Length: 151
Length: 151
Image (cartoon, rainbow over all chains, first blue to last red):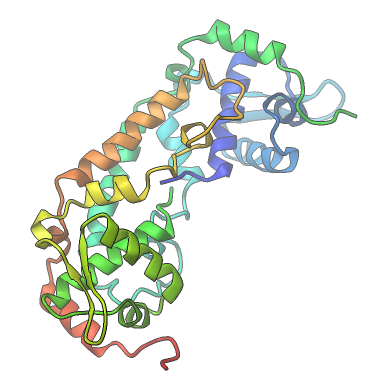
């Protein structure tokens, strides 16, 4: 069972911005520190801005920062939205299913129940809960050499 | 969040064999009825045989049938094994992770807890629980025209 790279990137951006605090951070800086594709990371960042989790400022000295405190960002809520449309199995994805037994399948409701148990566990957990060793993260981010070529 | 096509196919094979009962069924028949790739389905079927869920008989009139009653096949156990190695996020997959914060990340344990809640929900559910409308399944399987070219 996997969550999408898109969701993974969104969560990593949120962690990075939580540690950065009030400092304005660019998507390029985050991509370089994690050694991730800038294009994919920027897509997740744009989504976080549209969803109101991140505030972006344009122009020189601009960048991103969290739009609300980490304790107000539910990991369950973020993932439910970023994973919307990525259904656990084919019949749970948007659009018509090709599975011939979909209408009478007893497996789909069981899988849906487990799927919901996954999200329910995360609903009450916030970004603040994901930062137990805040200082260690500050140091790792600060020390990390960009893994991709810089301009 | 998605489970692999491999797991999806394995579960569909189990459902089909549960409905077929004592009849010997070939992987080709199952692939044709569902309209799925024979090669991919055969791979999942081979795995089910190796794991002891399915008994295969070679030769003319041979085929597959369940090796144990549906009530003794835990969906959680099947999925835990078929999804082994497909880790929820990159740092949970086998082999070294490329994520720089893996050692101090507070997100991974939270995701792992939710992942476990997913499987715990399924551990107590069996293939028999996934067959609430057994007769409807019998009829759908019997009526389904092969969706792929027959020899």
